[in-house]
Length: 113
Length: 113
Image (cartoon, rainbow over the protein chains, first blue to last red):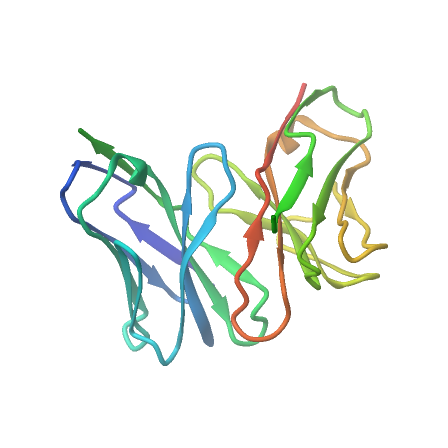
C-alpha cells in the first residue's frame, strides 16, 4: 500500500534553533516528493518539489533532502522564526499518475520565543 | 493575483440539506481537485478533474458530486450531507506538464448537524 509517514508528529523548539523533520514513503514507482507548509486553518503552500534525480533543494531557510534509494526525505529549517509555527506536510506522487498525491499526516511545529 | 478561491469559507448545515461549495482559479489551470482534511489524517482526495468535462473519483468520493463545465470552476456538491462529512475542504489546481505544483484554496470548514 502506498503510504507516507512523517516523524515526529509534533515538535517544539525555541526561536533561532534549527530542526529537521522526517518523511518515509512506500510509494512505488516514485515520481516526485513535495513539502508543504500549512498554517492553522489555511491551505497548504508549497515549499519544495524534488524529482527522482534531485537529492537536495532549498527555499530560503528551508532545505529538503531526498534519498530515493531508502525512500526517505527530510526538511531542515535553519534559524527558526515564530512564523515557522505550522504543520509541515510531506507529499509523494507516483509516476503512473503524477496528479495523484499521497499525503503524510504532517509534523506540527511550534516555535517559542 | 494568482489564486484559488472557495466559497463559503464556513458553513453550518443540517443533515440532508443539499449544498454546493464553489471553487474558482484564475491561473488557467487544467487540473483541479477537491480534498478533505480530518484530524489525524492526511488530506484525502475526493474528486479531480483533468480538464473541462473530464472528472474522476479520488480516494473518498462517496456522498459527493462534482462538475467541470468551465475551466476555471470546479464546484463540490453534497446532495444529502451527513455528519460524517463534517470536515475541512480544500480545492486545488495545477497546470499540466511535469511535476506540477498544486495551488490550494483557503479551505471551507463544513459542519453537518
